[in-house]
Length: 177
Image 1 (cartoon, rainbow, N blue to C red):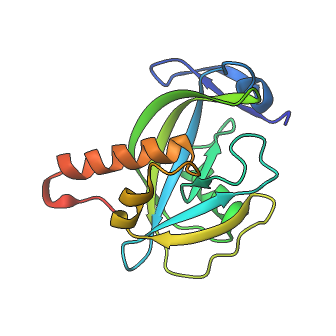
Image 2: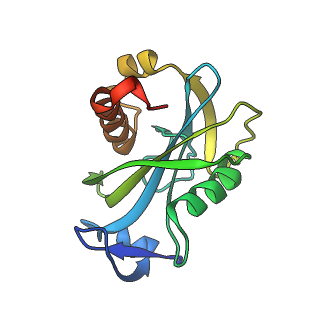
């Protein structure tokens, strides 16, 4: 966990680098992250279940993919790369919105992120990397609305989904997804 990630200020301006471990210790250090919703041809969202090996929120349902940026990466580059590493495919990604949150996980650590939500489309085979993802499923927006408050959902999935729904409601002609 000595990998260096981007530390940002409240305006999403990079102010330095720090280790992933330090950024998630205690109350956390604000850092840039991305989370992704991949939709299929039926307009279902791909959800992934975090591996039991994850330090924070193991075995919780997550967005299609979530990751941190490394120096020199754009949000889209990082997302496309991590999709391939975590679930065995890549697809073009489009930036949609961003949000900031801070939340603790037990006494283990926290997430303090300025998170960018990206969306993409993919209709092929999913091949999870078991070190990252223990399971996956395609779920409709309506099904996710009914499941979003379950205990086994990551906090950033809840926030990203709520922001996505707000985006759809505020967007003329329902352009999301």
